[in-house]
Image (cartoon, rainbow, N blue to C red; front, side, top):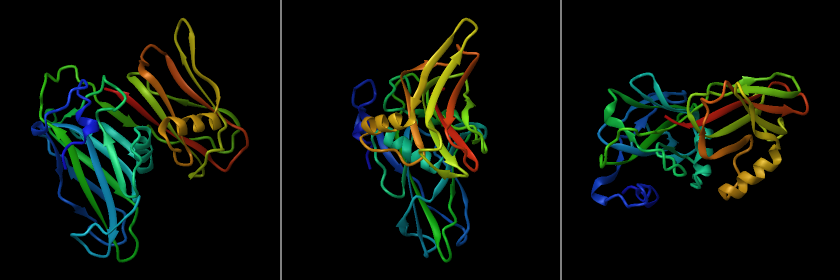
Length: 296
């Protein structure tokens, strides 16, 4: 599989030469035993620029070989360099929503991780050779009695074709779930403030059941010593959901809302940067995760 045209044309709007690009499939990895959730640690080759990683997962009663029936069985996915640099740290369903944000509607069982953001000319592919280690870590759902999970990975990569000094790569990770219990009214989520933010993906739930209705309004406010910037002011989440549907030519999954910042913005100008989500009616344990997308 050659590198996709949509990626090849991103290099300053000039096509990457075919002889300098490739799709590189890794060896299939399989559950070691049946019916048990597994953390798969897959070493990523560190030879070239990595633009994206394509992943598929399926289950079958056969221990190796076939991939079987594809399904959305990934609960979390990470890309970690040098043991402690997290370029990706997200839930599996978050990864699928980001594909929709990038206008690539995923089929069942398929996931894609991006290093060069399709909407940002400032982001660049990952120069894998500068790290001493690079791993893809995937956690799956227990595949059920008599079944094994099978994972296939393809790197979309190219040769080094220019000076990589000053490269900025897309990082996507969340800091954890904020739990608001049975509280109502506006609840606060504090963001990181050290990077150039491209957007926030909100994942909302009540007692871990995803829902579009547990929060109804959103504010994003940045405070500086000299002023306060209201980046979003009491936006109805029903309107945000609808706008997401227009923008991405299809609805995000239940419980997800996306806020993007055109051209990105620097967050280190703020002393605090917070989202405020309004809970109109008490639930059992309403909470939110926020996938922060920024350039590093």
